[in-house]
Image (cartoon, rainbow over all chains, first blue to last red; front, side, top):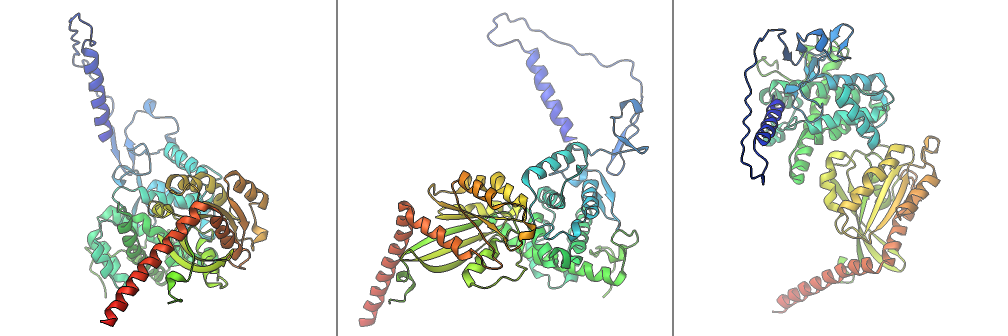
Length: 294
Length: 210
């Protein structure tokens, strides 16, 4: 919507400029262009957009080639890029735990798992080749798909970059002093449930479970809960002043560490497969409304 | 008084370790400073960390303050401020990870150009993890060629077996000593501190006598 507004302004300026006589031209003849109202209007289609189904009701002849995959209209995002955009304007889907998460993240996660990223040494810590990451990012922006042949560290890097560029920082709404006060994993979960808005809580739940999946393979990837929390935490806060960011990142690292350990324990007891659909009670976040056992 | 820190060394230099995450910067530093073998798992560095090492090179007693930076991209804004006034910069890559080598040209040399204030600062390229020779992806020749291209010293090392670890820091220190402007800067810090200490001492003794 903001995009449309911006375009409109530009257009108006251009029109106004065209209507004005060129400067230095002493003629003084004012050309006034009148634009009439549209006539003979017919209602052809009613198009709506929502985050889960994209544009609905677009006439077939207006659909972009490639928009229909297997008979389903692939929903484009309302924004042109997939990085640095609020989740409000992105196409989302549900993960196996019922969290509404941008499809780009689910796509990256699927590719990471399929390519054996979980067992790659130093996954989420090792940097990818800078040029390859830029290429993959461009492709992701253009087509929503990670090109083939992109390695796991690049995919992991893009997931971190997505969080790093998320407007507002995923965890910046947690008051720093409250974060410091959290002593146990349950404290952390309760704080998230009480202070994070639902879309952010869902994103965090998704991310924490991703980190737990990584930590579960510690023997192969050397990324235990602490290590994986350490490389994620700085990407979840956007404090401008580097020193504040640093201090906050350390607090958040401990915080995430506790949440990831909790997710590992919960999954051990409930034993759901990582993408099961009925694991609401093993969610790492205690929903504010739900009564808390213990 | 002879053992006071200010008079126990002739020069003080600032050295910076940079490079992609997980190439072994912290391991190199720990290996050098504590002369210990490294166990496999050193956690990622948050922000920056530094260690101090005293050593004798070329007949001079040196104090090296070695800054270890986080390779994680998020920390680049923080680590950039540590380039200022560095006398030596060690660029580290992992010989078993080609990306960490290509990123030196794409990322790290640019960071130096942007943030380093000492134009004469000595650079050293280090290909780490040579103990994993079976996984090697970057040859020694490639390393050498890149080092020549950007005017760096070059060494291949293993923080794990300590191969070439001391050599790396000592060669860097030797080279720094050969640059007159750096030598002067490193010595003047010491002189200033010695002077300050002498004044403090005389003040103290003055107070004592009264």
